[in-house]
Length: 252
View 1 (cartoon, one colour):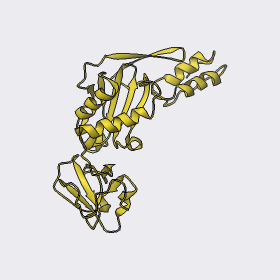
View 2 (cartoon, rainbow, N blue to C red):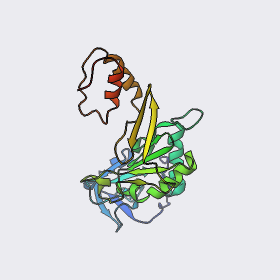
View 3 (tube, rainbow, N blue to C red):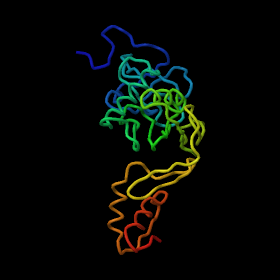
View 4 (cartoon, helix red, strand yellow):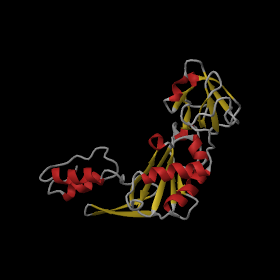
């Protein structure tokens, strides 16, 4: 019985650029990361492009994004013999959103998270009427327009804001825009988010309150009553504002 997603016996996987693993380095069959030390050879391929991964005997392992610059040089997106195209992105994003919703797309929260949703390097958050997309790998940065289009089909035509890490680890060697509007409309210069009796206003070019820890912020408000609170490295003030609401103690 062949593994799920493996080609039928005697049938070679779809070609294109191929990355061949060293003998004894077939852990990629159960792990989505491939390091340079696992690679026997790889076809000539542009950094960030998709490759077909095969084992030392040429058997199909999966398909993923390859970047020769970092030590973690390939991230597997699928173990099926399928194209990493627009339809693939739409399926994966649709599945990710479906796992998080009940009766509709959430107005605030994380819609997709990297390997956990079979989309290594891609993080998607929704802040009210705007989607924030972070591309953490060169492969995802290269297909960011396709990601935006797929999100439009999955959650609707919302403005998309691109956030990409800067500095040494920027998309593992990519150079996309560090902050800017996506293709699906102009982004607002600021956004406002209600929550827990407070309203947050933040510029898109800056980090704003994280979408997830609302419960934790409410808990801080309860614990802060009659206490002085030191806000040290707690993002951009969400916890401090809830501490202020919790009682007479003032954040330092």
